[in-house]
Image: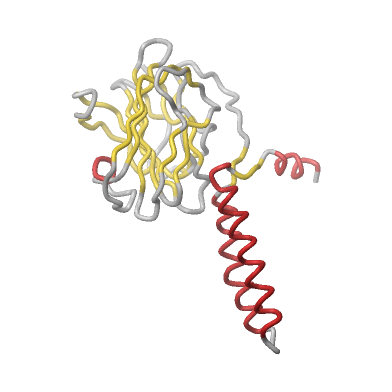
Length: 229
């Protein structure tokens, strides 16, 4: 019981969802009271409470924000920037910035995953760029370039460049990026937040060693996905 309470204390609601959760809760309570008082039967109230109460709890689950700390060695480590599932591990031509081949590792986040994003490496943010685009399903290859996305370039202490790409999916309609150019960044810090189903791509130098397999679940700020060369 003590361990369970300890874990609950490490979970909070992300600031991106505080207002939505509060306003929607007040609206649901108001409608529920009206239904309670307007009908002789409780059936409309019960149906409303079950359907919209469940929807509100799902939204609460979506906005949860666990407090995590990476306990491993950070040098050369690339830590998962998000909860989800590995959908891509491949060498690919990156023509936007590097104009050469990179190792790309992609994590797909379903609506049931935590949607906070963490910095995958320690270093300094070189730039942050946002691009408008489409809303293809996030696991499709074309989503990486055609969907709305935000690019964050990080330079590690030993000069390696790591590109992190937050990608909006078919359901996602808002990408929030906290990273700022020229600021120091560290594993354990939040990089941003993506609302609803989405994806995060990480582009690494060739020679980086993948530490995950396809379809493997990841835990943001905990799972080591690769080792830099």
